[in-house]
Image 1 (cartoon, rainbow, N blue to C red):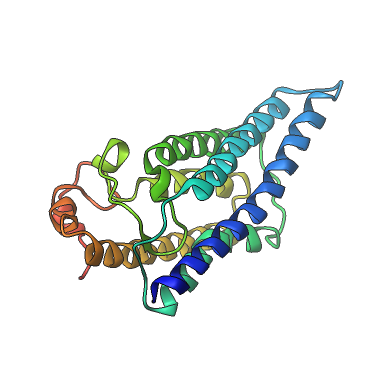
Image 2 (tube, rainbow, N blue to C red; image 1 turned 120 degrees about the horizontal axis):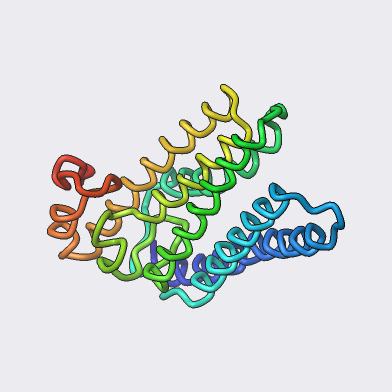
Length: 228
């Protein structure tokens, strides 16, 4: 991909990402305000509002790192890489609304909300370290190897998946679990695509990949390396 096209695509990507996530952020802020304006507030309402607040932090951080990120040095050559990235980012949002409703106990719902909060707050922490290297598409900006990236190569996917498990728990069914499995398989493919771009851009990536496992902390990194 030539540098001019890459620059135009990057600008378009920044605009589209912010246009998508900012309305979602505003919707959650309004929900929090409406929740605490109610006179019959319950404990589960408070936890739900806390999950929405964690979502506001996450979405806000996404917008910040998107606006401030560095220009890409290299991008994936295959169309599949972009399709997979889009599916991994938006599949759950698009499909989850069509899942049949499931009655859940307060305990199960609370567990799901707790996992969602933990996953979103952990994602905010990871985004702080990823910073200007953030990208949804398989692109290389700079190699980040500090903080959570010194433990696993893809900590953001790991923390986001904790939040996804929380969402599945709150709507537990064969359909939601199946969707979660499909989503995780797509995310694994995203990791392969991203690593291919990073390996082609940064000479130090191979040594980094040998020392740091892909997604499971404290495992042998070499066994989890993707194909070049």
